Image 1 (cartoon, rainbow, N blue to C red):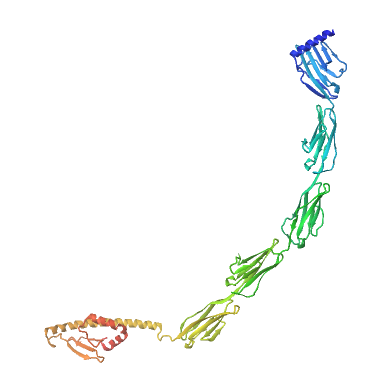
Image 2 (cartoon, rainbow, N blue to C red):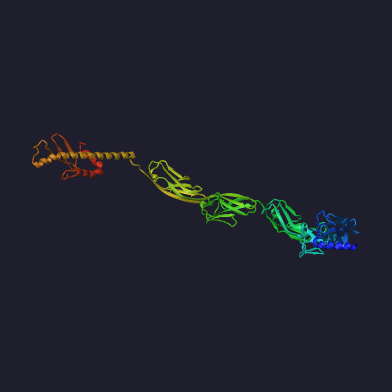
Length: 602
């Protein structure tokens, strides 16, 4: 019977190797001590199994021959056979259950399969121990050791959520259970954990806070408020900070200063507290200290009492004058202005190196104006004004008035000059003083004795300078005839000349007509009584040598001709008479008067 069974098993096994290898799903199974495992086949239930055999390390576990199965002692109560698929469940596992498992199945065809089972002690009681609780950066090394229950354990170290790996300063020993870091830095500190795993379980230790002391460094001093200069009487807060673990202790360093702590307040500071301030940070674990860069606190008073003063109360053109800008308090800069505009010094205007003294060498009248000096420091600025009046003159002196005036008329002379302050005036007539303290000289009724040289002398009692101007005035007799009279005389003369010329022309034409018959009779040889139209002629000698010819006609008409010369022309003509009148034109008044006397017809 046993032989038959063995042959059957071999046959089935052989057939399985040929036809149904790999009927088990898993090649390797891991399970914890006390746990369970299911060896699962690839057969899909329901399957009609006629024969089945499970072995462990070539020892039978359970045998099924329809319709009954046989369980090996030691597995009773620990296994369950799923006959519909041939799968097997093994419970209450122990380390001794580790090994090789095989199955042989005979159904419509033969199937075999094998797998390995590994039983592990579960991970538990994971803990960390440390060797150096107090670590100093760059000076210390530390070691962490991890312990755990279980079998086939693997160790991993975590700092926060990052895994710690080996490097030049980091060593992992004892299968990874020991972590050593040399020359620790601040970046090594953190929450360290040990994570232990095996194929069936894992566990993590509690966190260990690894603290690395470092610093102090980056020690700095801050001022509040932040100013380059602080006004006398104000408050200043000083704050010291440093990068340090544990937090640093602070000590203040400065002239006449003592104190500790990260903050220092200076109340109602004064100029005596101007100076450098710094703080020192100290770490009592690392035993290191560091001093901050000094902060300079400058305390200034406000500027007050600004003024501009002159070296003289009365500035005179041509002299040298200095304007000095002064004030109480620290002065940083000065700015000069003239008449509201920034002052640009000219060739004869200079400022000293500090800008406090404005010098005029020499002074000009154009330098007059409103000067202001602004005095500044970082706290405030003040301004002082000064009115500079440049006294000058007198200059450009002149007398305004007539050079000739008629007697009995009013004479007014005005004297003017450019001068600051205004000049005083004195009048002289031919070196005799006639008026003082007046720019205007007036003589209501002039006399001939008022003719002469009028001298106006201008005096500036500030500049102590004088100037004089001379005007010669002539007092004369007015003409006997007024201007209207003279115009009337000229008009009358012109009228008389016109009448004389007209009369002369009329007489000459009439005489010509009378002489024509006389000349005809003479040419024919007739005597004085041979005709009615004959003319009786007589001549008389004028008392001044001229000759007056009188000719009478029978019709009793008569005319007179006046000759202005001692001789008669060779022949009478109108052109000769006209020329004679032209020569007499300059003496028209006298000639006309003489004609009136000699010509009764006029």
